[in-house]
Length: 348
Image (cartoon, rainbow, N blue to C red; front, side, top):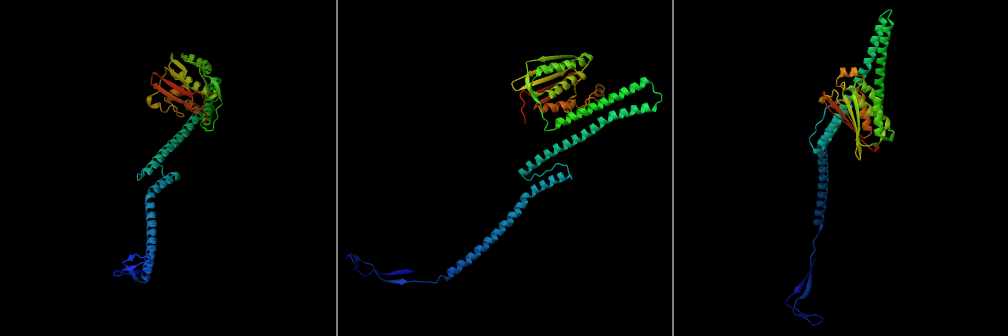
């Protein structure tokens, strides 16, 4: 470092003749070694590097510890889901640590509940199918054994037993036919043969076929068409829907009763309503009447006939048309089935 030495007492002039009261008489040169500064800087650099390494290790360790602590609830969720998947448990799970885990667990529990309901329904369906198919076979076995156990069976008795056997065979055949129809409708790839159809004409044709059955029970069938209806539907399945509903209304009616069919439409949907003066449906049974093999009154249903699959098939056919089926009923006073189907079919 250089420092000028000033003479403040001298009066001198510069080259231009101006007076310069402060004249420089000399320069003082000051120097000092910077080795200590360099050494101190190197020491600080080493310490800073060591500190950075320590901080990085500490941050990494803290991140690992925090990540394990934060993901522990999710690991519990995963373990619980794996336990359900492997079949070790079917209980609902609860991990209320975070809002996220609560949402995930709630969604999983809803899915598990749905799966359990489907599994219970499947087991019940298999049991019902086994029972329904076994009953006619048991009757046939009893009737045939009775014939074999007797000698010199009269022709009249033989004919009577054979008629009963034929009736049981027809009943079993009907059950199998309905089961096959239901299985086909359960397939997601089931195709519909959609055509533009006059629903009024179809209804008239169906009622014409069913009125002889109604006359046997002295049941009056009335058709009320509010307006002409043309819709895009599958004719076979639409016939099945209407036939099942009207036939049930006739079969489960009272003597000298009535069945009223109302056809109406708006700009989007058409409605097919079947009401009757029949025996009605208990309130606790309304939620189950479309289940497979469900019967409100098993003894009465067996006398009337049927497989217990008609309404299940009907509901499947309605859903295939993107429609809805609703039921209202008062026990002892009658029922009302309302089908609502879009006028224009919308493919999935």
